[in-house]
Length: 167
Image (tube, rainbow, N blue to C red; front, top):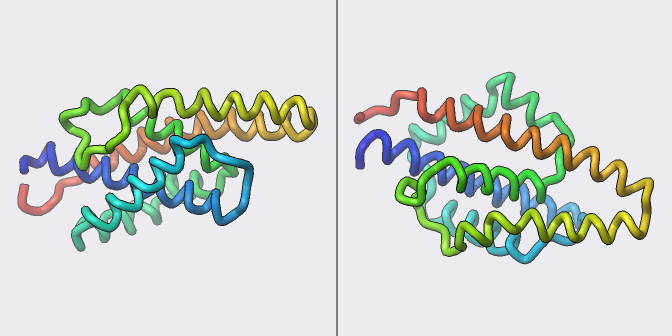
């Protein structure tokens, strides 16, 4: 595996691990329902975490990255966990070519891209039920969409700029 392939593989594994964590936390919080695609993403994230895992060097790098002020600030920002997962995977799918996305997901790019549409359909129904709560949720979702791009860009840069041993 070349250094470039290793970095993209790590990026993919980190993205899937975060998606698993966010969706798992969403389920544990017993928040509002998720689109079906989220259950598939959660399963893919779990499988990636168990099957592919991370090396000791990668774990040290990720722990150090998690203590970085930029990432700590992002962690303190209130977000919709479902929207964060859907936006990050959408951004990942549109940014990284399929050849560089390993491990492979058994979910088509098209399905990943329409997951957000299913969530917005759900939000329209919420708006009909409770206008005040909807306004708050919409504000959080708008902030989450922006936060997802910032998170992904920071993660992408950190991984691509890091020099891993053996390359």
